[in-house]
Figure 1 (cartoon, rainbow, N blue to C red):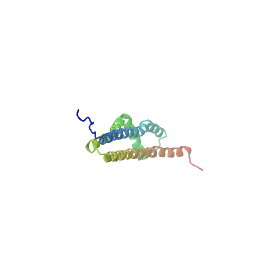
Figure 2 (cartoon, rainbow, N blue to C red):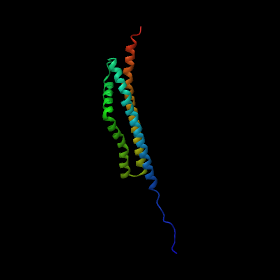
Figure 3 (spheres, rainbow, N blue to C red):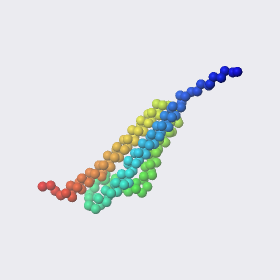
Length: 148
């Protein structure tokens, strides 16, 4: 009988591939959460402010006007375009993974992608708060009347 020793299998590439798919799933989920956190207020909350500002004939700043216009555009068809943009981040990551499949590049991609998504959420959230609630404070002051 011949020597029946099992062949030696190199497992060094498998953890990298599993890590890559885990990171891609994480960034896809994070992109979708950012999409929901940005699109939901623009499509459902901002239009209510439009009615309030129109009823009181309030003079609103340019940032608020821009946000109201973006809201009406998003309500029509912009949400789909933004969804595609959010999903391109993981797609770029897959492309990077297949062209530079090292653990270091995958971890760097995950960190950069996560940072971009979080920064996008924070900036857009802050702009929405400033654009919508600051004119509301001025409107409440106007309705309340001058202080004596």
